Image (cartoon, rainbow, N blue to C red):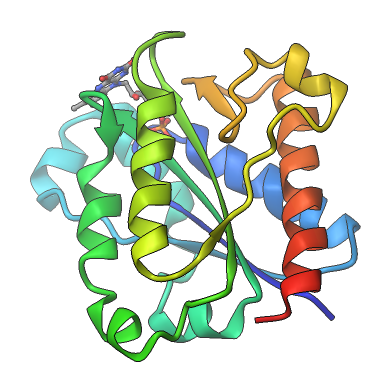
Length: 195
Ligand SMILES: Cc1cc2nc3c(=O)[nH]c(=O)nc-3n(C[C@H](O)[C@H](O)[C@H](O)COP(=O)(O)O)c2cc1C
């Protein structure tokens, strides 16, 4: 069975919902799925000081934090993260920075990865956040699985060929179809790679 780790960081809940949608689609495609979160790095008083941030922290609390073993276990990784000033969220970057042990061993080499990101604005930098994440993944020898325009939904969802690049808020029906396509493609290519 193809094994997929869906991992997300989310401040306000969008990327949590994206990860849920991707996990559901990967399961429907026949994969064994782990849905996991990247740990928060902001001080607890900062999180508690914003209602939206605290609400998401409470929702995500039941989801286990991703470990290096969860990445080694997977044939493919679906990563979702918000955009911060045109790049990936610092929480996501900080987590990547903890994976040097896997990088040194080549433990992620040959595994498939696909990335989704959101921003407040249509052209606010989500594409850049996705590309940055692929660049880091390539340092691990991972294989980026971009959706390109391999499904008609890519002409409806804003058209980012690197991965779903969406807006903040609950994913709508088009977003869900786009994420499902991206997740199915990850499962199919991860199965072929078998790493
Ligand atoms: C510190 C900070 C920086 C942000 N930078 C950008 C940005 O550069 N462009 C943009 O369109 N949105 C930006 N946003 C909005 C977030 O990308 C948006 O809230 C996020 O995609 C929602 O995802 P989430 O609900 O999973 O946290 C920023 C938000 C914060 C808090």
